[in-house]
Length: 161
Image (cartoon, rainbow, N blue to C red; front, top):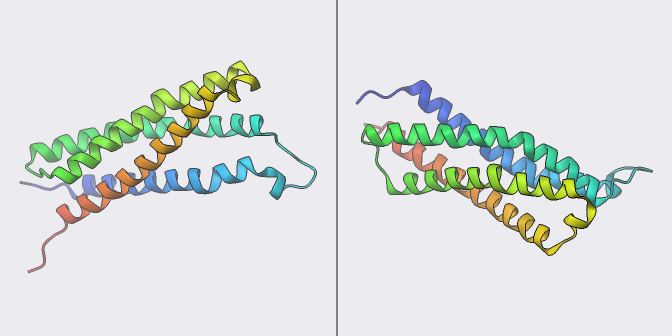
């Protein structure tokens, strides 16, 4: 069973970069964008326009997330075929794939379409519920990425003799 160290390295970089991006977007970018009143002087971006900015950031990030889902699916299928079967990494990979696709193909487009309707649509209970669900999905994605990274690292590490 031949291991491709470059593919493994690329996989770990992709997982780590994706985890980092999720953390930065959720913990740093969103709070800054939505709290311009605290940061800027004589410039106030209302909540609706801050949402438009974040929506555009997440729309662009969705392309990365699609790539992530595809790469994880291909890598994990190849690992499975090569006999690197593990229930934890399989479960984490499935969660990464599904949360990625859910965020990119359901939540982001739905939020953007409601924003396009106008301010009233973004103040509805439906929008609030979709937004909360997308935040939960994003958090689950972060945890699954971390679990997958750690588990694959443990599986692929070279045993010391």
